[in-house]
Amino acid sequence: FLDERLGFPSISAVVEMVLSEVQTCPVTDVADVLEVDRTARAAGCAAVDRVGSADRESSVRKRRVGA
Image 1 (spheres, rainbow, N blue to C red):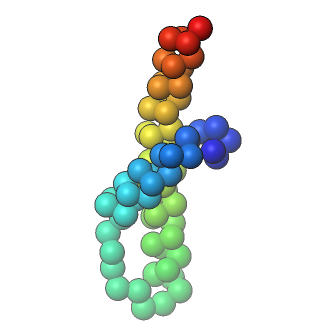
Image 2: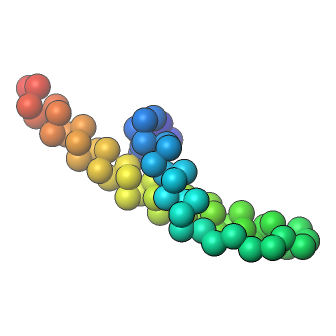
């Protein structure tokens, strides 16, 4: 998933990480929405990197064991 950067089952882990890392705040205008969106996307990219790295390592180990 995502150019093979993340396993499909790991999507929920990424969502959980983003929701726990991004602070909520009152939204009063479009600028607030855009700021929250930017922050959440950055957190999502970082989470994909962390979780995806673990997915790739696990995949490599499985291939070595099965080879």
